[in-house]
Image 1 (tube, rainbow, N blue to C red):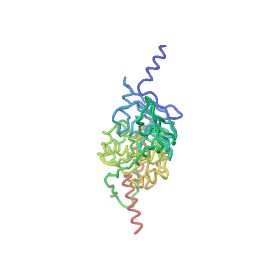
Image 2: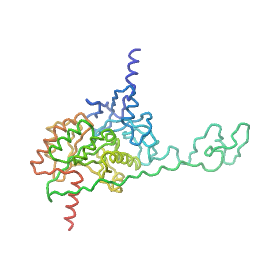
Image 3: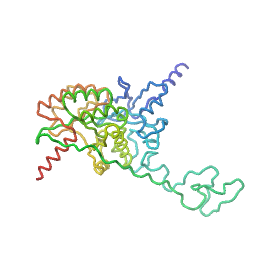
Image 4: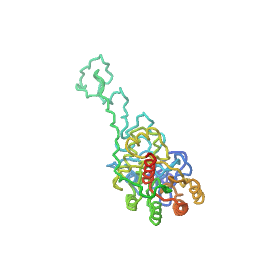
Length: 394
């Protein structure tokens, strides 16, 4: 009896949110950590608060949530290029991706109707009657006449199915529209023909590894590009401001680190739009750069990004810091596989192994500078390539 009581007590609050094939972990900060390797994973979200459920909602709710509601589903955050990611709950609100599990790979397939997800079809199927209220005559056939009986409702409400006219259907949800990027134009002003490389960091920000990375970049007078996750942006606004103030660049890495290749148009754009809104609030602009979680793309995603004047950014070197590669192995990987115009993938959140990334960073900066490389942001790199193409076309 005592053991049962203790178990009930431990299950209060946030509890465990599972979304895959292995148990999740938390690091020293209590932040969720993914397992090694790629694929969906479970996660434990620890909240040391007697009102744990409320703490979870306030901590991890979607950007437009107004009144706290019960947390439901699972979400991805702090994920990796092709790896499993910790999941976090997202409130079931009208403008949150409720109903489907946030971050699961089983979310709405193209053309499917998702439950109460912003921008998706309503749950009622075409041709189905609206829900009848008790007392309404919903069984009458088109040719039958309503009978007046004592106690019956002489004025049936629309949608009760008592007349022969087609029932009104819920209008389809309007398509989601993305705002135009407002990020200041980025121009490469360095030497023509220089050996350029861009350092990128995914899944942050946080208040542990991201500041340590920023300290190194500042000391080396180098700017990088941070592809940020909406859930993290909401929590660490001060770190976001520091990224911008110190000259580095911010890109959109979706709100909940979902596999965009498995989503339809509206869910894709919601993942981007929610994060745009948070980045605009914290950094002062809507970013132009988008990086898909896991690097998982699709023709639909590419079209959405292009139609909205964005740039879909991948990488040429994966350090595999997310899976716990040693500093020595990662350093050898970077030195072997970096070429002019390259983009190096690292992370600033999402795993206890990111401590290795902090150790790696000054080493690869030293190595690549010795080889004659100059460090630029992704925006600068893209502009340098555009300048090169324009010069070649003349």
